[in-house]
Image 1 (cartoon, rainbow, N blue to C red):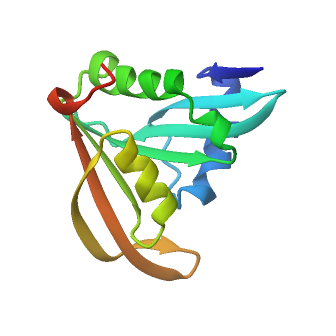
Image 2 (cartoon, rainbow, N blue to C red; image 1 turned 45 degrees about the horizontal axis):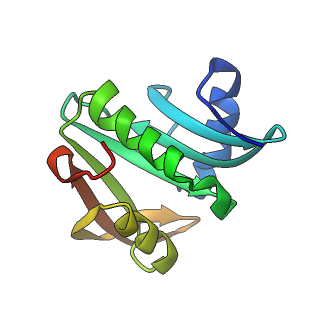
Length: 141
């Protein structure tokens, strides 16, 4: 059975799991997260960082499509817009990753721009697509 976690017990495990998958290169300890777990195995993580009161950055990595359930998406947007009180959320991804772009757009984010050579993947820099979601445009809350 899939369960959702956000406890201290899972915080470091989920961060270390998502870090290489979401191409996070800093050890920022100021983050919140939602972990998607099954049989003590991480299926996916949604990490929230760089909160400034108005905006929050969202990083998503999934090893299993079953982790992307409607209840998880609702929890993500509830956290962003109701609990954190943001009026917008920002996500970036490798511009050539069609699968993740489809997922990001499928939940309602709109592409706002492109940053050339801005995302490091291993030793290479690639273009990053920038996505935004405004609270008033979110169908999940």
